[in-house]
Image (tube, rainbow, N blue to C red; front, top):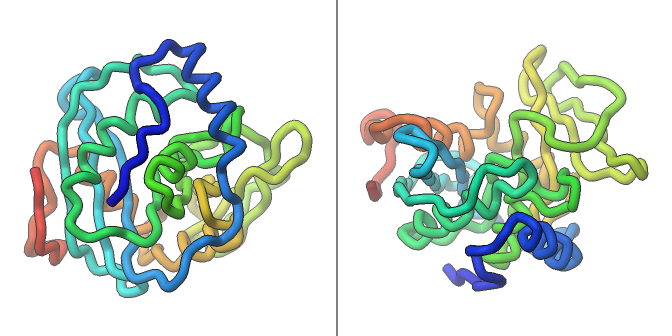
Length: 236
């Protein structure tokens, strides 16, 4: 998997904001992918301490959603916790995990924001540009934007909009009467396709299987059992 070096990671918060503004203009908000065979999920946890990031990447076939491979790596973080700049803190750790992935995914679902971000450049968009791959932001909570109502039936959604009333994402209900997810374009995909793919990755939980399994790995000290998940490749 090609990983582009778009900028230095050792930057100040003010420079990080400048980088976001510069790169946001390069995000592609339409479909640029073909047949989907493999989908990946990415999440970051800090189970040991706030200075060590645990990055988890899971790879599933599509549309069957069998877990085929996963990677878990621990990395020291150099960038402080700053709301709106999490990609600078977390992506270096994610890259280390992605380097160990044996199969290249067609689309990546990220636990975080895409363009539903004050500068339209959340983690999913940042990672999409670095990898030159379609990415989707699948966030459990809202960072930015407003919406008219909270959908409560599976598949129902409403637009998430910024102060200029521009659509920057979707508030999507993935199960009846549960809290919605906040879906946004990462890179090389439309919002409608992002919603459709997220729903196709739902089995019985609120989260899609991609980021649900990645979240389990990133937040726990031990990996999932092979007998439980069917994975045939593990890197710790």
